[in-house]
Figure 1 (cartoon, rainbow, N blue to C red):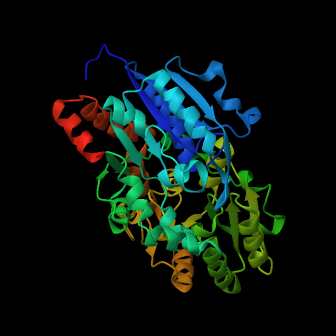
Figure 2: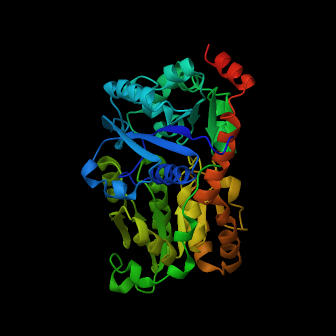
Length: 417
């Protein structure tokens, strides 16, 4: 790729600040990284909700090569904390794409752009007409985790019956998956145009064992819990995260070990949070904190004793990596992407999905033995999952496809017929 030419990248996302999910924070970090490289102009199309809270994206903080375009949005019915484009947003996005004339269009979470939202794939017509790469990124296992939401099993049945997911992703030239597990999920749904590029990453420098201090936990722990062992879940509270399993496992532990406490850091739809709080109510020493951000999040991660992620649906697992970098042992599920970088007994602990007793036993084991070697190895392994490394991986791929050779043009033309 010529170093003196500026290439315009258009990212069409649904997860973006002020949302605080891992995908949202990565999409923001990725946009900034590419804008700072000097040979990219980055245009991000993101939901317009809560503009007044968008303090982190003020003009003074934006690189001159970074443009944020907000489209009309609405809460997504399956998960109302996610905002998705309205039907009229698709037309607006297409007009803006014609104005910016991108060399590459990337859409994340294709289902959220189409299903129960815009019912269109913005940018497809422009990409086809101008022979530019039209790329999908697979961030979320919507098909599988939709089965965990009461009343939404019909969605999974509908999608599966009509092979809708496969149809949508095959409107793109390529589907980029952040892990082999995500690629396998795609293949099982009939999505064959996949390639694996480890693009997800986090700001590793933010998370550090040196942050550890019990004072960071005092806002939630009672005086009698001062010397307790603290188990932590941190993330979005959705049914697919299976925090209910963690609460049930903690109930088993609490019967035998009164000096254990559980902190659940995160938030989610009202019905999910209400159900989890109702399940936790009979059990002592469980604390819900709501979302934790920035320095507070990093301090709490380093100050707990064990981190647990019980979800089997992770396409990557950013919070797992953040816990590893924070110097606390991780207990998670032997499923999805995390099983590709968590090695049982080496840099963390893996349990079988939906096995409450095994989960409880593994947590107790992590709280009871010397985990110094495991933590040390986890710290080393976490370093490979930085934002910079993920963006470098994408940069190398973009360089290949932005060569726009005759061979690539012929392939994209064939894929869109």
